[in-house]
Amino acid sequence: MDGWVGAWTGGRRAVHLGNVADFNEQFFAAGMDGAQRARRLRQAHHYAGMATCYSPEPALVVLPGEVERDWIDWLARELDWGPVELYSGVAPGETLARALAARPALAARIAGGPEPVLAWGRTPAQGEGPEGEGPELAAVRRYESKAASHRLFAGLAPDHPGIVVPRQEQPDSPRRTARRLTARAGRGQTTVVKSPHGVGGYGTVVVTPQQLFAAGGARALLRRLAREEVLPPGGGLLLEEYIDGGRADRLRDLTFDAVIGEDGTVHPVGVGAMAVDGTRYQGVTVGPGVVPPSAAATARRFGRAVGERLAAEGHRGWYDVDFVTDRERRLAPTETNLRLTGPAIAFVLQARLDQVRGPGHVVRTLDAMPLGARLSQQALHDHLDRLRPRCAALGVTLLPLVVTAGYDPEPAVGLALAARGDAPDAWASGAVEALDAAEALVGAANQALGRMFEALR
Image (cartoon, rainbow, N blue to C red):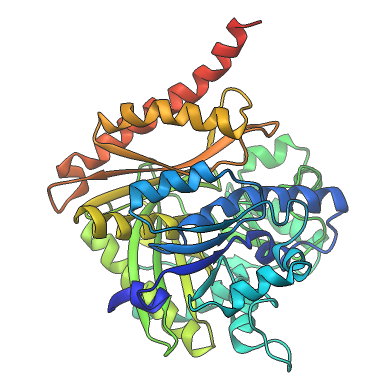
């Protein structure tokens, strides 16, 4: 099979490992206490529900949290999957690697089957040799750093018109960080403060001069952000130029995704428009014409050049490059991720739907839609099942992805919505409008859950 799907799976059904927590743990801050670590693991285990859709057709899925079979059956019907082996509840309070070490039969089934094994990201448990860290893991460890990726971007940008790299610095102490942040605020400059490592917006915050002075100064603000777990404790923070995009619109935050094959060849997957609230990723829309051709071409050229450099340093598998746009619609690369991401799931779903239902699908993932009330998995299933035909009436397919967070103190659900257009442009075809309507419908119904339970009091 040609293209990125062939490079990713060899055209075969695959084993999917929900090892989000394992990957993230490699980059936990040294000062993180036990309670913080437990919260991070729990959040990652919820997000590991995305493992159901790592590839167009799974053969076996391993999830750390307990997931009822009905959810897999729902996806299998809509995506025309064959039988799927499901192992869930494997690691409710620990990483997947540690849990599998205590389940040798399951570990042997994963390693000994004919299917390719796909994970969220590479960790020491994913095939490192007896000599220790191999080149693939070394590349991940290096370029998951927002400082190292920034240096890579700066080196490549001169050969890529339409790319502008934000200025970045890394003060050598917390005191100097506070001083530099104060100096920038004094000049009226907004700053993006970043931990060298972070996921989903954690470890990144935009600081305006007004926010800094209202907090009582930079040192007070940085201490507060560490207490609130927005930034990690200690030093080592990056200060980056804020790229002003002017009026906010759908094209403020873009992503380019690709797969590096075993031979080092870069296979582009696509360019998507992300939804970002502040610095927190919320979801993405992918499909034909979602991103204008000129912006998509710029992202693709630069993203491919990044991938060629990553491949030369040993990376294999999925990666992405994230961008923000400035007022002139130039693209500013902000980070690269050497792993799967939320947008990867959207691209996989688009490919599968195009395969089984015909081309032209536009897919939107919504990774953490708030629920108005805490729901058990069965109650959540019933709630979404009632919404399914209402979405279908709009020409939209509803696909559940993250289903284990419905009973959290702040309950949420992760979904995908898909519509098929009859034109090469998602906007002209009406597919984006249909997704907007379905998203509004689901959001309103989720919030109405709270009012329903209030009526029972």
